Image (cartoon, rainbow, N blue to C red):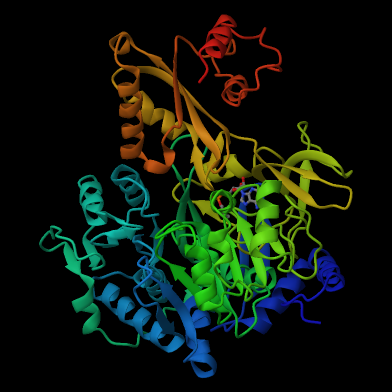
Length: 635
Ligand code: PRX
């Protein structure tokens, strides 16, 4: 039996038991047997959730890229590491072998060094899904720079906030990006962002769409000519286990986005371990995760997890509906994809289209199907199972978070029997539990509660960049000595977990985490707006969509409401990005508030979801009358 690669349910239970009874020995063996280290650790784990402080593999020295690249060169140097499928279906796919990837990462790393980037410096990467994105990520890791990838759908203002929060010295971007039959002016967005970012010294620009852009002298440089003359070898910076590897921003329920900090050794061990087990990857397989590297899913399961296992990982530049809704399946057939990992929102969108888009293609290569990012509804699960997996490929409904670094609760395919909408069992090393509202652990099954984790796992985020107190307050204060996920969950009679959704003010729209506060802040910037509140409501494809309740100042009264709606959405697009636009905007004279002035979102949520029969107790409201007005005018 190999605890690194679990092959049946009995093994899972054995391995799980060991991981709980003796976690340090468990992770030590995995770390020792499956990775290369420049120096072994002195101590496997030290932790204190009350501070909170966490150290895994303390004293160890390593570089994650030696595990993702160098060690594969002898055994699989000519194997495809990254298979790049461009936006244009007629353009040829690019197979980048491990040897070529090693060379391209080295060249990029040497360019970064030439610009003075060194260990510990932060580099912002704002690129579309082209090979340069993965290469930049790895090049930073090669020289010990901390990468902060910002999803290339974020606006200039959102980009500037993230660049400044972590003091990035450099931005790596491209002239633009392709998105279906559209192009996006990324460099223009970067230029606008940098008007507010004094710390950025250098911008490196990859050429992708060959658009006319402006290059600022002594700041902006085309990448290609620099890479052309760079050495194809670059020694790896030797990192301490707990040195930061990257920062990735995620939305909180209030205020600024949180720059989650992931460190080197624990993240490597856990992302690689979970990749191997959750996807049951075998040497000849071709694996495809449709996420963007701008999200944690792409970090852990397009780049680091697959490459640490010597896998072939697909990077897709395009969108599911270009040139038509068959694109995903065309790619599966063309590259004989074995493991396919996507989001419920994509499945729902695909399921709405004619089945002929699926039936045209041979999907027989598929072995494992995955979903991530939000709860998958039963209908979507069955559509995926019946039409894509043909009832032969197990679906792994993987629950995890930016903060957890890797998959936490998921079936192990061919081992764990699946049930639609259940993420099933915690992976080895993950001590999940449910807590009640009084802070007590719920020990019985068939109960709902708040999902927490009782014991550290190697890839936990270690802090929020520049704000450890917020890290403590957000994750370690709700329940003593536990990591609080922010999610609610149900545990059934067999111990399977079903994630029921967020219990805080984070709303998941098309799999993207959106905090209510930053969106409300953007709305309130409109000169005609006095106050606003947003909530989520169920949406067929996006899972949730956003519903805004807006109180106008006098200047807004009498103005064309549709114009105002467009202006508000335009502001949101500028401040955050198009993903945060509101589907519905209702103008109202007031918002239901408690006597202490807190907006009762519970009521607004019900009205938005057209569920006004059971509004619960409204008598404690400061202004109960406003509820009737809101119901009457609901959209
Ligand atoms: O609410 C959970 C939901 O997504 C949140 C984490 O979002 P993010 O940090 O953006 O990471 C997404 C990709 C890992 C969680 O708190 N979520 C994620 N996966 C699932 C899920 N909800 C239900 N089922 C899932 N499989």
